[in-house]
Amino acid sequence: MLHDALAELPPGCAPACGACERPRSVEESLAGKKARAVRALSRWEDRIEDIVSPPEERRLGYRDRTALKALWTPEERWRFGMEGVRTDVRGPLRFARPRPFVPLTDCPVHTERIRKMLHLPASALPPDEPEGSFPLRFLGISGAQATFVFKAKTEPPSDGWLFEPRDGSPSLADVLGDIGIEGLWFHANPAAGVRLFAKRGWRLAWGAPRSADSRGLLYGPASFSQLLPELHDASLDEARRFLVPGAGDAAADLYCGIGASLRLWRKCGADALGVEGSGEAVECALHNAPGATVLRGSCADRIPMISDFLRSVPPEQRIAYVNPPRTGLEPQVTELLASHKLRGAAYLSCSPGTLARDLAILEKAYIVERLLPYDFFPRTAAVEVLALLRGR
Image 1 (tube, rainbow, N blue to C red):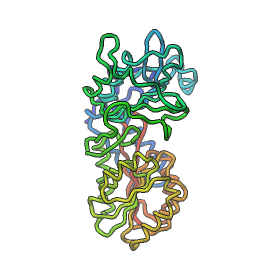
Image 2 (image 1 turned 120 degrees about the vertical axis):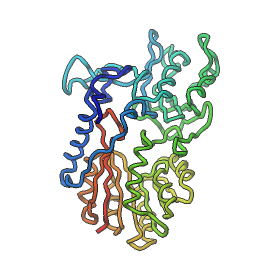
Image 3 (image 1 turned 60 degrees about the vertical axis):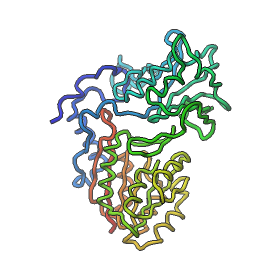
Image 4 (image 1 turned 90 degrees about the vertical axis):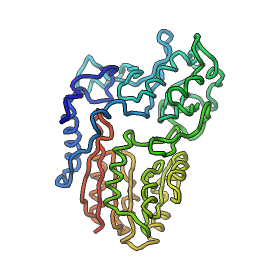
């Protein structure tokens, strides 16, 4: 039985952070997530199963991807963190601006690699004096790929400082490999602060442009993948057992990311078509899922190609797997899935609310057989749900 692991803030946790749930037991946290899924999906409450959670030892030190704001002050030099919450008030006013800047250098949810990386730049980076001379705004870390995001229209600052020792310490380039960083990027983004990344302005300053995760999946500096690979694999295995992909089947994998699910359908012998908006993710997916076809663009824009792919086989050989962003399926995609008489579909959602909206439409063509909640983000309020849909 899980004990009261959230009853106190762990060492390194900033009280004003606000990103994680305030101290709660593991049981309370999981019950809250299950209740959130039930509230949003009440129409299918009888099909919602118990939440699948990682073991206790994986509830800290699991976040190997993060994007943190950079702040320079002459007194404390560079710090990396986020806007926190006000601790002097309660309720919604806690989120009223101005909100305090909370350094997250020792956040216990981050992996050791990220904590080490956050400790390095404080002394290794040039100062932002005069203001704007070193316009660093964010530090993004995606596993072994790190990115300094500069608010600049054309080129980020020169990289000479990266290879120069500072204050008697080795240069930043000399120690990156020792802490598990394999590639360091400079990214010039004139809209930094409005959004993290732009399409252009990328430059590899040091190391390799791609890395491989614990599953052997190739990824880059802007790639998204689940933070707990073993839990993600468990959800994919549920989808595989339900969809039973095999030779002769056509598997449409929409919002396919770097291709973890695409690879699975291909290993089972099915033909697979992936659609993804990020060029970097498309490149990785083609590498990670040999033999799959991967199209770049929004799923809505690729409806004709998806439709042709599905109609290339009889209805009993058509399956789909979708993993959209928090906004859910694009209306054209919902209509496509509802109109093409698929054998079955699996829908992994990070928002129970938009999942409920989409299921209300898809139910005309599918039977909602199972709803499986997952605790992909321990210590937060987030819950993901895998919906398994049988074609009528």
